[in-house]
Length: 341
Image (tube, rainbow, N blue to C red; front, side, top):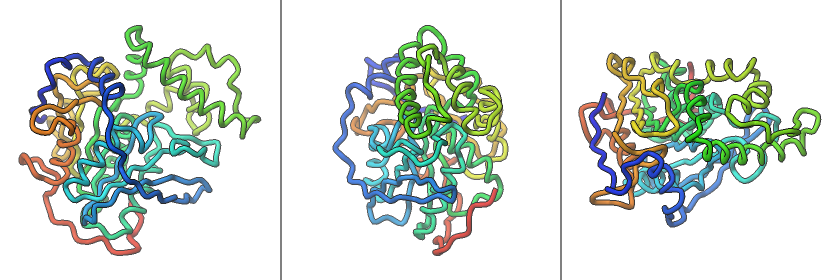
């Protein structure tokens, strides 16, 4: 358990305000990306957007549900690492890069196999250190992958930072079904409907959006679409097999989970205090404020959000005795073996 130094601006001491404010008010200068298309063994692809600073270290940034590399919270994280000499790769989940993916499969909260392939591809560039940062379900993927790797995590993988993570998908889905979260839920369902409609046009025999308006919750959506399309029995099976909460114990490289106590999307089960208290590698930081993917900037550099600066500090080992760099990783050779785990 890590005491948090985050102090929000005086007018943002409410979880909903912190959640909405960055969406409505934050505007960052465009990050200059170079796109790389990663072809996958199953015939699909992932689009990786690179922002290079001629660094020897690189951070891989995973966005949230129906996000992309173009979201301001992603660009803010990329800019923070670039400013400090790190290259950055913001990867787009399947179907989130502006071009439909080829297969019926789409992105979901348990797709750590896609993140694994991104890490393998980036590592082949020969960086000394590779760090991971994920937001919301991207954070879930980050923690899940670290747990799957366990003791086989390579030395050059210096750690991961997960921000605003629904690490228990079932209880978080129940929180999202509450009356106070209805506006968020409706927005997510509208965005997901667009994806389903686009896929239905290409796979009419496999998808049907008739009566889509009857879907009101993540349980409804996951039962009808996510689970059957990705090999899960139902929403309960999908949540049980995809929640990073069940992959925390095996983590064997430094990991920081940054969840705000006032995050309106998270349940008590998303704050694994008992696990972190006895875990050598997992660090849990719970600021009183921050909302969901908020942590709006304050202090010396208000243009940088707390989560951005905190992620860099942790992965670079710049602050605290629990920094991520407990060793000096050797350079990664070309043709790096695939991650095992």
